Image (cartoon, rainbow, N blue to C red; front, top):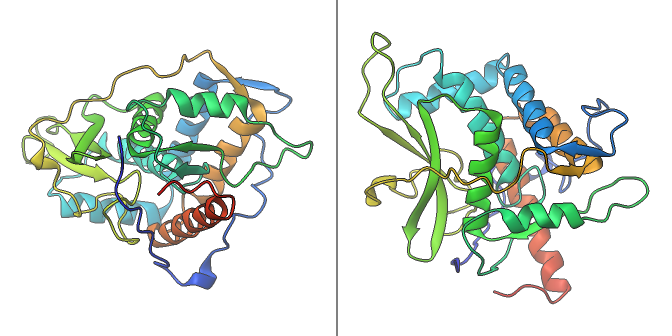
Length: 280
């Protein structure tokens, strides 16, 4: 799937508010004394981080604004789903917390190649990760988001799938089914756009953007493909870094996360240009 112009815009928050690259991850170790970590353990650790995030008043306030904007009543299942969607989105988007770099690849809309790149990642002796951990385009990123969100565990009310706002671009959509009886009125279905890259969007757009109308596609089919086996072993240094990045940054304000994302993607593009790797 060939994307349009990335069009990264800097910044959203004050430029001085964030560094181009995050500082060293937090000291806690989710996988002590491990050399390999099964994918299921990574998802379980991320799910625990989502539960931990539920105590953040800032995150709850952002959640309230999102559901109000979409006419959703609050209930006991929706907030945990939001936390998992939020983490999966910020982690797997282009320029996000896990170092995914957008580039045209002309690959199938699935995340297999991303997992393969993570398997092949050569880490230096000090365990530091490169600024880009894998290269993928819009449909691969959207599939990865779906795999991670489902892996963390969503309720039966939430589905995540792929949406084509144009014939050459893919993002994800979080589809929310009606609430249980007695928990309030809502439309038959609510669709929230998950912009896994900024293609055709300005640098301010994030989870829930109105830049695309998800109803232009009659049905959003859930992405249920198992791109990676649950017992597949990942390098522990990589899995550790992924969880540490979520622990460190998932509770940041959305504007701050967006500015950091924009800066990381800008730096990735400059490095690719200098190396003669920018294909656009």
